[in-house]
Picture (spheres, rainbow over the protein chains, first blue to last red):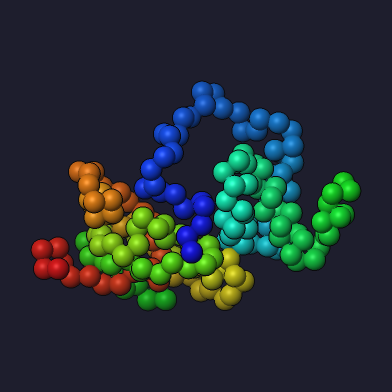
Length: 94
Length: 95
């Protein structure tokens, strides 16, 4: 039942290449996702382990094609929908 | 939860392959290692991820020989592991 996040020791992945002088965020939306997650955990909407679990159960193809903060946004929307706080339709409507 | 291990103790990790979040990576399951040091107490992520009650429990840094994990390699790998993932193992050389 191991999931796509658990690839330690698996062949076929290149070395991690650190970006020189990497900024905390590569786009404004990433900072918004970061802040939103902190606020939702801080308010007790979900906890950090639920958040990590929501990332880890992403469909494998989508997980591998997503950037770091795309995974975060996926987990946030998954948890908000599952907990009945927002519907998928409401989130799609902006 | 009472502390079961001390630095230098040999431990055997769980073989469980859970269908939920865990901090015991697949490559470190069913492996023998040595406790390096205690890393405080923290609730078990496997339970918190499922919104189950989770009391703080000891977390340890455990050192493994790469050959134990991957079948080859001269280096070691250290992983921080919750006490629930660990069982006592025989001292090195007696297993």
